[in-house]
Length: 325
Image (cartoon, rainbow, N blue to C red; front, side):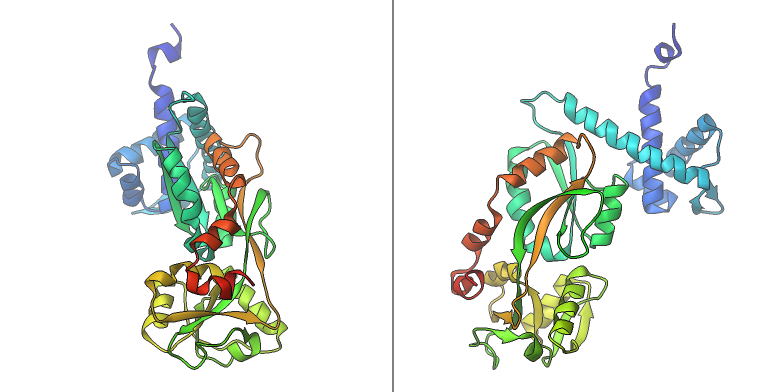
């Protein structure tokens, strides 16, 4: 009788211990990592200890609490992430074709894409009822890191500004820019506004660590003016609050006009001189083969005419003003 026959669950234990390590590296805290794995802290600690003993290396540097992974631990973590990704892909491949996907599709999206993302994800989720979609708002830098270390399956980000590397890209739509301001303000009837004039207004903008803000900075610089962002935030809710309840204005992608049905009192004025646009798209890791669920999402996105969907869902009162430009 072989060792594997005597211990039929040992492979499950090995996978589980790798999951514990990945969780600990993500949370950097034993209790939070255990909670994310739905086990007790002693169980998680014992699993990592077992992994160390089987590999005969120290993986985690410990004190009263988690300190860091050792050099050897970082190497083990990189392999663990690949093994867990391959294991998840294999489980998806072995599902009966008529049963549909199970597990998770992990999507990282830059904040500028969030008003649009449901046009992709809701319909895909409807087609795969046993699949869970996890969508997180991330910077493009975090999306790159997540795709590289197997923490994400798919990213939605800019393709022509600070493009990601080691990915396959699918263009989805061109993003343009509007000044969002009060509908009862002095600019409400304007058909367009220049970047130079917009720079003189009290603006609430996203913080410079976000790529959308860096794009705006570049367009203001090209217009020969400095940006006047007196309020900066990394929270879209905070930004909306300043627009909705004060006299502040903002510059955002035209897709945010999709939300104006619930945001009475605001108007969007296209930016001009020059008119600017950037391509937004879907990215997946440049690996062959892709995980089946990531490949299915990519194939699904290829069939969508997202610009047409955006135009259809845009409020009628702003469609001609913004979308038709």
